[in-house]
Image 1 (cartoon, rainbow, N blue to C red):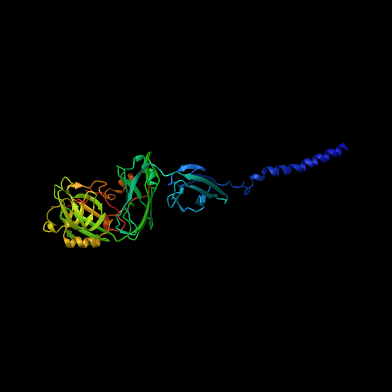
Image 2 (image 1 turned 90 degrees about the horizontal axis):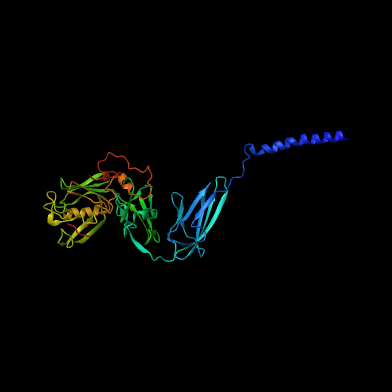
Length: 420
């Protein structure tokens, strides 16, 4: 009996052993992977955050997946539209949030295996700020047709300190259709930032701009003033080349010379600036008043005036100098043309057209007008407070003047309605 009992125990042990071995190796067989982990998701502002700026965005950081849904609602249950940044780092409400309101963001991320993670965060915005509001002006108007050199320009008063420029720049948005990416560039004093692409805008491009600065903390003591938007299009390509040596203006449209116009530029005591400028404003009638200028002392009404600089350089009709046009310079810094040519130019040009002046006694100061094209692309890109994609470069062209060919890029060149 004892022998039979031992044999039975031995046979049970032998029979059980393969089962144990199979169980130990099952996890190592191909196709027997463990269930995929859900994506890891972080959402900001943090849950129950208070005193959140009305410029807040819904920040989303995900590991092991991608964001597949974002829903932002206010404390009355109304949905707040939002759009994702290109880099996916956050969702930006399409209008500023309201002060002293509570918002809930619900974000869903989906992993590669289809598993999802959803996270909610509820936050309350700050009361109306008592900080000083920085005045901003968006020099890009809705429903216009601009020239191919038109930069998007935002000016500030007071200036934006260097340490706050990246935060401000992140709230300046430009979309182009068809896509033609560019970058923002700050003037050294922080009073102006300009946006352009490496090349001129292609005719027909639609440009949508948003300066979303309302409620944005700027430095320690200031706050953004307003949220502004505008959409416009780019028209035909027109460029004006003014040569002091010949006293002639060459007017091009889509690469073809339309006309040569005799000009009289600034006399030696009040010279015209050399550089790449952009037409900023056009007036059928305006008044030049230089009574407060060191070299001024007159008030005169002029017709068909087109502003080129903040300091008061214009192209305008000057019947009093028609005998000098094409021969000598007699103006106070402006480009004088005849009545007939000034009228013709007003019908040809657009705000945003490039005007290049060369060969005069002084060069154009950066910031004296819209000077985005007065430096080469590499120098312009250095003015960005945020990284510029390395692949963003001008088109290589043998064309001597960028305004002659659509999409070309500009070379760097070697005053109030003061006028002249």
